Length: 316
Image (cartoon, rainbow, N blue to C red; front, side):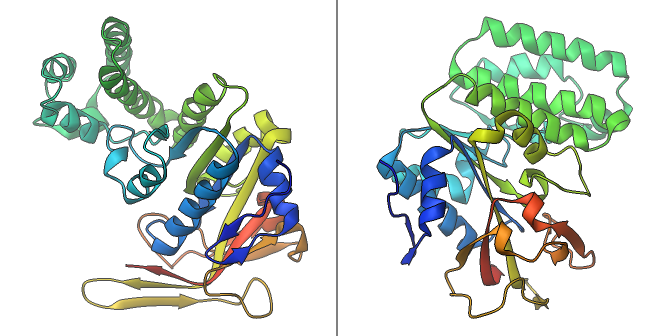
């Protein structure tokens, strides 16, 4: 059905965006900072409206895949449709994946297999982060591949695949920098997308990873997506006039010049990036460390197709 009206917290989405949501197979809705209830509500509402009209082949969240069910956004999305395929696509936290295998009592054969490959990880995480010889990574990867084929159940494969991502990330990070993380994330996402033809796929995560152009991380997930799915891709960015964070001891508040003029609804508004003045503008690209010290400049019309703009983003 073309031109369906998409509503987000009472707001009617522009018809131009409605048409793009219908036409595009890969829909990205990113966030300029992690942890906002407003943004997770908006992302959930978008998924809910798309579900009314289309079948969703998969949703991707910027989490470790074995822990993704514990995330707040997963629970919201799962409540919409318990059959949704929701994947985490974030590599790097090897010890967390290892600990999951150790504590997962529902798969009693899992931990001995993983522990045999990582005999020292339980007591010395730093050994695997910094001291392991490059040749040993290849041995570990070979063993994980072998187990992946021997134990085809979804529960086992999810752990082995996450461990493969984690170990591959650690192997190449020292030589290629953190950009290898985006390459691995893209490989995981595209591997899932390419198995289906008629379904839509939703990708949620940080703007730093998912924008088409990012001068601070040129080869990011968004640039890879743009290269492969150009005609089937819609990227919705996110920004705000101010960010307010509540910490144990105080409230941090940071405000900048508005990206657009006029009154912005509290629930946010979708703006075509082509309507935003060309050139580099100060934008929020705040990672998990929540630092306001760095000011980022992004060419917004080249980075996103649309912007979801809020007057204030609140982090509890």
